[in-house]
Length: 135
Image 1 (tube, rainbow, N blue to C red):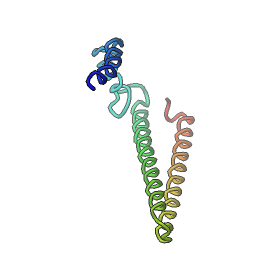
Image 2 (cartoon, rainbow, N blue to C red):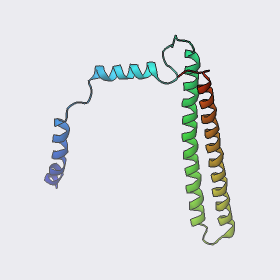
Image 3 (tube, one colour):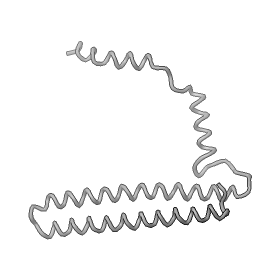
Image 4 (tube, rainbow, N blue to C red):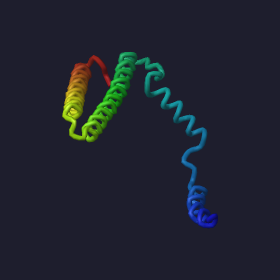
């Protein structure tokens, strides 16, 4: 038994030992500093005209992206929960109706979220093309 485990583990250990290192510690720290200074809400000051507005627009985009991802997860959980309820209804019409209503409500919610995303994308394109925010 012990020998069998060693023969399975040995190729992975040799492969790991022989692979070159991806990045040194200094390179990793440099990439972290670069990410902190150029992206996200803690970006370094942009002293060009409209820099604050660009940072605010980037922060709003970051928040909206996170919110849309969260709402996508909520939609998926609602659909799974409704499907589970429908499968476990075992012919009980009240449970089936409840599951169908949950699916319908989740689909309407997803449609509202997608329309809101389309509206925000359209408005941001109009604002960007008007020259108010230069990217």
